[in-house]
Image (cartoon, rainbow, N blue to C red):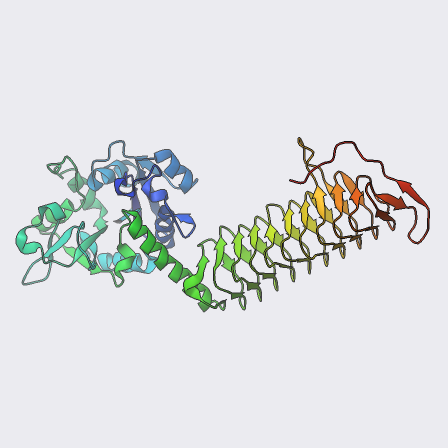
Amino acid sequence: MDLTIVVLAAGLGTRMKSDLPKLLHPLAGRPMLQFVIDAARALEPTNLAVVVGHGADLVRQALGEGIPTVAQEQQLGTGHALQQAERVVAGRTGTVLVLHGDTPLIRPRTLRHLVEHHQAARATVTLLTFRPEDPAGYGHIVRDADTGGVLAVVEEVEVAPEQQAIGEVSSGVLCFRDAWLWPNLARLEPSPGGEIYLTGLVALACQGGETVAAVQAADPLDVVGLDHRSRLARAEAEMRRRINERWMLEGVTLVHPEATYIEAGVRIGADTVIWPNTLLQGQTRIGRQCTIGPGAVIRDSTIGDGCRVELSVVEQAIMEEGSDVGPFGHLRKGAHLGQGAHMGNFGEVKNATLGSGAKMGHFSYLGDATVGAGANIGAGTITCNYDGQRKHRTLIGTGAFIGSGTMLVAPVEIGDGAMTGAGSVVTRDVPPGSVAFGVPARVQSKPGTDEAGDIPPEGVERDHG
């Protein structure tokens, strides 16, 4: 599209009462500014630039590479902000679209309709307007009583008594003819407060006999600016509703959508069922035909097809096809459940892998461990992986059987098919096919024989972490 888009993102946002720049406040798991950038990119503009000011370094960091930014050193109004962008965007396309970074609910279809109307009408200026429930704080649209044409946008502090009843207001989103915009932008006079208002261009265009058009947004929520936390909360509810609606249309069942929280970066496969009080965050990926919840929290994790997560927390973890966790389980960073693996109630896994078909039924902790396929971890098993200074790994072989209450003092290896008796404290490797039991554990050289040897303690008992 022959289009330049400038996003104004320099404001201080004092009404947020926050050290964080207003446009970086999170909405559905992303900075609110990111939604405006995404909507802008959906139009495939020729040029895209962002005007930054307060918290410029943080804003640039959030934007990442590939988006040009220009600085507004002093926040002297929207007109002044656009003047800063002139040197990087002027004269490159026929149309300039100006957006505001605090309108994250703006939809690409709304912007596309605005631009198409502007170009079809051969307008010099086109405003995107709306009718909010409360017009306070917005620029009021003044129209010609006979033709309905736009005469001006009057800021609230300058609204005359006879204009108080005006319900139509400017969203601040405007389209301009590039060749007219830049020389007239330089003509704008500062307000008594020293700020240059971008909406003053509407009056200049009208005075000069230029065509000024207006498009009213079909949904007022699209253009509501989030200048305090109450509006941010309402926008969060609307964004959550949109996200949930999208996934239901994609074939995902949300049993109680109003009690389901899915962030914008999450992806979910068809025929998955999400039960209430579930929170899906970050870059989580969930496969097809899963059952998630109730009461699940999944953050930046990958869940394969046919998995189940019930009343559990999964963070920065991987669950392969057919694996399950819960209720009351915790997969911490680096946890990996292999295909068909099971972790039951009150279990915790951190930086550890359960191989395919391995089972860890309940009341156990595995940290810094690798468990082979088909192994069974008895209730109360703990890998004592921390010696007070360093973490150490535990290796449990394929088909191994770890008895209830076993303490595995890392570093230690349990061989394939080996067994430990209930309550054992294992401080030395257990060879494949052997049985270890006792405190400290004793090992039979072969299963079913009476030959045994002591495994001496290491002196300092290690704790788990």
